[in-house]
Length: 217
Image 1 (cartoon, rainbow, N blue to C red):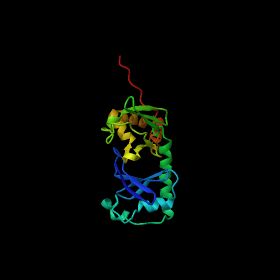
Image 2 (tube, helix red, strand yellow):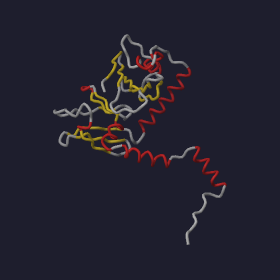
Image 3 (cartoon, helix red, strand yellow):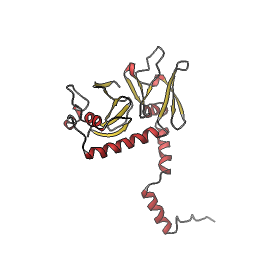
Image 4 (cartoon, rainbow, N blue to C red):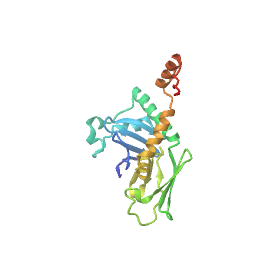
C-alpha cells in the first residue's frame, strides 16, 4: 500500500495484507507507532520516539485530508501528553518490545535474482523463501528487484522507491495458507500457562486428579 501522508518528518503507511482492526503505522527516524483508527488508540510503539510526538500524531491535524477523517472526528486534534497517556504509552512500548524480541520477528530479507524469490530470516532462527510474484506490486517487475527494508518491529517489508509496504505474516499466509499459522497458534496455545489453567489444575488435583480410564476386559 502507498504512504498516505508525509509531514514534518513523519510518514503514515498502510501495509498490504495487514490485519484488522483498521490501523495505520506512523514512522519517524527509525521508530514506528501503530494507531487504531476507530479509537485513535496507540497500541504499539517500537523504537526511540518521544511521548509528545506520539500524542501529536495520534491526534493528527495538518491542513490536509488524513486517514483519520473517515473514522471519527475525535482523532483530528493536537494533544499534549498527560499523566494517563504516559501509562498508556508505556504499555504500548512494552508491546513493541515484545514484538521485536519475538522469534517470529523478521531480521533479514534479500532478493535472490537467480531464483526470483524473497529470502526471509527470522529472529528465532527460521527462514522462508517466497516467490516474488506473490507480492502485489512486484508481480510484474522485470528488472532486478532492490533489497527490501525490514520494519523496526520486524513485521513488514518495505520498498521505498516503489512506495510499497507488505505485512509479513499476511504474505506468509498467502504463500503457505492459513493452516500453517493455525497449527502453530494451536500448539502455542496448548502450551501456554494462564491463571485460569493454573486454578483448574489445582481444583482438579484437590479432587484426586483426572479420573483413571477404565480398562476393557
